[in-house]
Length: 105
Image 1: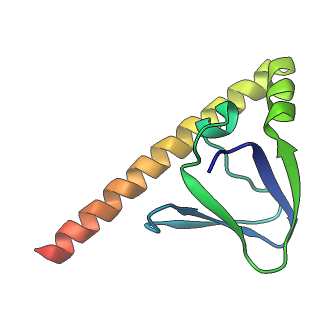
Image 2: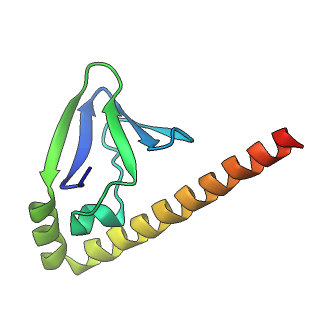
């Protein structure tokens, strides 16, 4: 799926899962997930689902890009968040592979 928006829950919560169901992360009120794919409308590295009844603020990718272009300080913060997200995904994936390897031996 192509990422073309950011979802921010303001009631209820969301769950972020990778496509192989190797990890899951809950997002509470005011939290959001962002990846590089969000900025370039690329393929999403995750699935985002509601955790029961949920209301979200949806920020379209075009509006987010316009905001970031006008606010370089916030753009730098988003870039730092994206780098952290990518690092965490990689670390989690490596930990899962490690855990499977330990179970197999």
